[in-house]
Length: 80
Image (cartoon, rainbow, N blue to C red):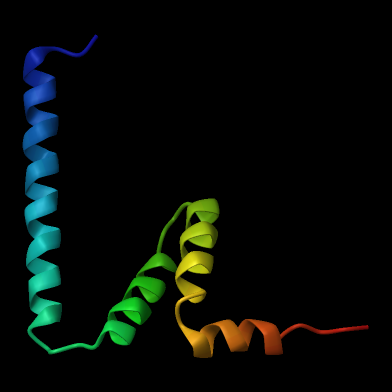
């Protein structure tokens, strides 16, 4: 059974993880990236997810917003 202390530790860890992620985002934005580059970064990061189903879901959604990647998928279809 989780204690109040365990919940506090989990909230602190979540807050720290969020802060780290926000700092990473700020560093990326300092490069002056375009919206298409942000989408591509999201796509490449989604490919790094350990959960295959989550990776496929997220990458396929993002791929729909990146015309060159959407075309790549269509062009890689092999018909027999």
